[in-house]
Length: 209
Image (cartoon, rainbow, N blue to C red; front, side, top):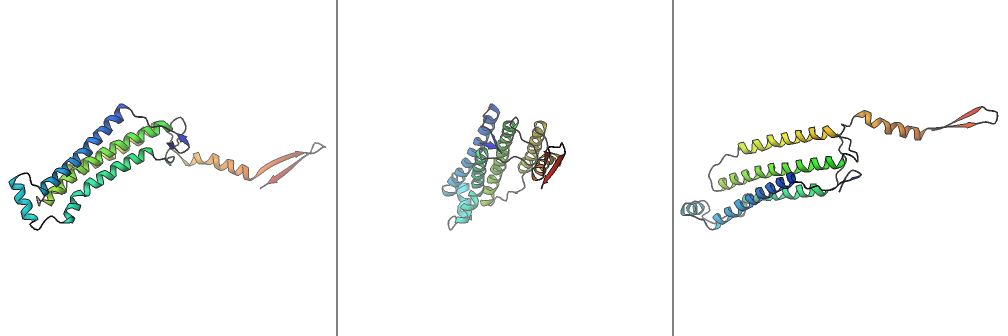
């Protein structure tokens, strides 16, 4: 794996391991909830639920209902796949910060912790939305507004801000001044000055542009 031209490796510490285990637990809860929902729709576990299902879907459960019920678990699967792919892909050097060989590994470790934290927050939100969706399929009239969802968005913004501050502490913020040396170097290469000494001690200055 690389950050720009610098080789880095996947460090797996206790903190990242704990965060990833929590993410797996949330994924399990989402799919356990989904499997339980499917089971209750096809074979209701009690008389009350059976009466509700038979009343709402007297002619059978249509395909769009199943599609609706699987929407958020499918999105959760997409979040997990994207998060894992993001860990192993080659990353470009950030435009905001100057990454060197000395800080490339630390930069990668920092964004990987952030990646895992954002995955957990996304799965928390999707678990809540899965529950709401299932209730509404059964006409429970559950509000789509969720304090959990709002809290997840707030915490995600806080995580991104803290990550920015951590990177800023060990990586220099790129400015316009940092681009000038390369521009000056290229300018010198385009127009070189060559001084040739004559036999009589005078100098000829030959310009090439």
